Image 1 (cartoon, protein in one colour):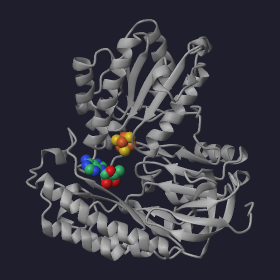
Image 2 (image 1 turned 180 degrees about the vertical axis):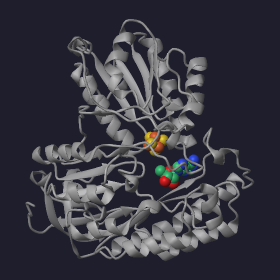
Image 3 (image 1 turned 120 degrees about the vertical axis):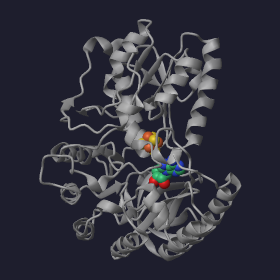
Length: 472
Ligand code: 5AD
Ligand code: SF4
């Protein structure tokens, strides 16, 4: 048993990170024959992409996917630890699985992802949910075949490394989309914002080598993919941990030079956003003009307590530079009710929102995460007041989101049609700057980037009609 350890997870070592290739023993490829798996994913795109890897590994072992948990032989929850409500959802689901397991004791059930990296969670599982068969961490995905073999041999498996793992290349992926793909460019995070659990659950920053990333993008392009999103907790710091002379702007340029139709990247930290990156974004038409730039707070006092390493003034300076990218959309993340946040601090956040008029924002109430510095800070604000602040903030966020969309009424935009929409006879997709559009179009246009005229706008989506098929 290898349990997670918070003390270890806090350490940043100088250990070399090795790159290895994924391998599976031929004998394990028959383990899943005749068995169905069900996997539920919580959290961010990083987790969604991990799930794509887990699915492909399971299918390599001949498990078959089912969307019906009741009929599954293997149930996995790929969990998120970022806020308490993500936690609670997972424990609710574990309760449902328990009922199922009482009826069908042969079901194998396990959890993985960020919650599996938390010492408190694994202790709770061992105490209260000891019937779970498998717990594996974010650094242990490539070892899933061996872990499952032991589980099917009757042993409970807990394998969670707290110290960062190596980079494993060539893990297969069963991608959700045939047209757009996630591409990890780095793992982990070294920023240690005081509220955030990610540096503990995902380990120290480890960048993939540029050649490996370009090879993956090239292969995706050859398979017909139109869009890649470069993924990392803090993509702008890409390469800083490598013994190399390239950085995020060089990587962006190299990915753009593959000539794949669309290149995106998330998430940016304002601290590492260089002028060179902005120039590269402006220079290449296939780097999409969409930037997610988390603000978190508009009060310098709170930003300091959060350990964000920028001020309201330097954020706004960067924001204004980014606004010069033609047709750019900028979105953000904001936390209200951070420990010690006063009404004046909150008003400062609102002022920044009124200045930036974001295209959209994800807004959260602070959630204390065990082991983070902020969880020990004195927090005198009542939940009721925090909810009021969130409500007020959302009023502004929604107002500006609608205004940003209204600019597009009767205008032409380019949309990558990626799937059927919930609306009958409509397909859905995103504009270059990440606006969701429902397009009245035949399904033969799926996977194409088409010109669309916007006919109606709402706060979170727009409707449109195809003008000319554009087989870019
Ligand atoms: N409480 C509330 N929100 C959080 N986030 C990260 N940690 C916390 C927390 N402890 C938010 C931040 C981050 C987004 C992914 O989640 O805004 O940018
Ligand atoms: Fe959740 Fe963060 Fe883990 Fe993503 S990296 S799943 S947001 S805790």
